[in-house]
Amino acid sequence: MILYPAIDLKDGSCVRLERGDMARVTVFSNDPAEQARIFQAAGCPWLHVVDLNGAFAGKTVNAEAVAAIAANVDIPLQLGGGLRDLAVMAHWLEHGVSRLILGTVAVRNPALVVEACKEFPGYIAVGIDARNGRAAVSGWQETSDVAAIDLGLRFEDAGVAAIVYTDISRDGMLTGINFDGVAEFTDALTTPVIASGGVASLADLVALKPLAERGVQGVVVGRALYDGGLDVKAALQVLEPGGEC
Image 1: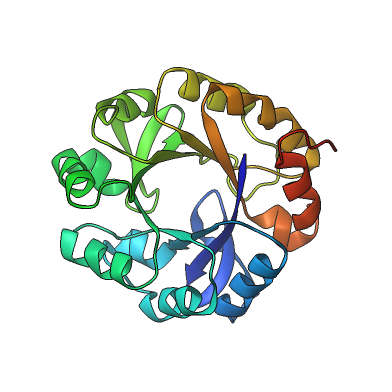
Image 2: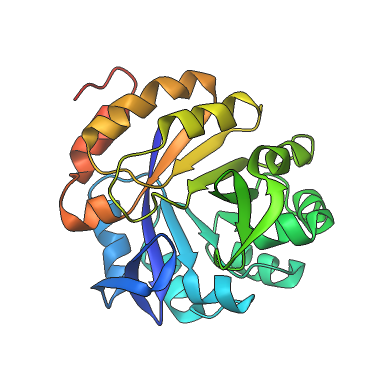
């Protein structure tokens, strides 16, 4: 199972929010590129980067920070937040981003997701942020009428590389991952799933790891890595095949 350390960008800094609330923010670094280098040096195989301002604005806002991250690491990174047209997607794929996460457009313009998968095969993921079982959009400001599982099923044959499934109620709260919710979502799909939201300790990773056999490809971890509740190298060891806490 792949560990995806999260680098969430707000106003050029590396931050963590509580339940996606931009008013409940903690700044952990004013140098996102350096934070990316730290994760790479610790052995992380991927990075999970989100332009939070972009998610709200519907367009890329933290372009300078994203470009700096891409230029300062050799490991692949996936990028989400404000990606809503093919030209922008092409730009980032040409400038060091390895995978694009499409969230709001998956609800509002699913045809664009299908088109992006055809235009950039293997490089498109869908981000499904669930609040009470429904998909939220626009930086989690709005909750749609679309069930998270139904949204995932829409793209089963589209060529999506993975679905990043986030439990909003737990994101940034260190309350533990919603194992049952992740399991239910994963079991409904054949597309690989990356779980996100609430990871607080090695125990969460140990509990999640058996779901690898059911389709969970990886896990996004944010605040626990920054607060020191979870050691990066220990997390990587646990997630390795045969790894134990």
